[in-house]
Length: 138
Image 1: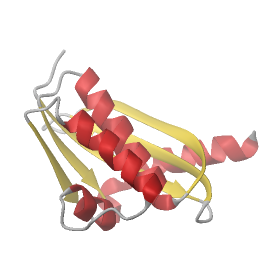
Image 2: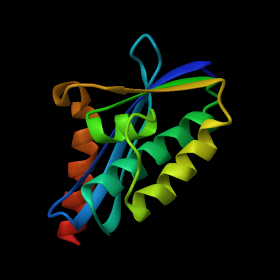
Image 3: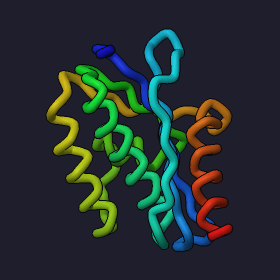
Image 4: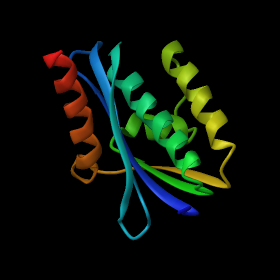
């Protein structure tokens, strides 16, 4: 079933900065039904790079699900301010991911980036920690 408007919650984290890193995302319908979720270990990166990898994975999944508009919610104020153009992206590693996100955005009629309090992003955060824990256990 295709949903025209979706809401994505994404997060990224590293244990150490840089350190072992993972991202997580949860995609919901406007009425709160979860239709996708994923957490993945991404190697040794910075916290910000893990955040961006989570945003990129979520936007790609939303496109795969047929969304025309996407509201991306995250607890990284820096990522929101960079993706909305308020702050410049100076880090070369982030700049590459920024361009990939921008290129994915073109497939949608509208994509918005919204900062949410950490407690409102708990599901995505839990997926980050599960992926990091799975990796740590080998």
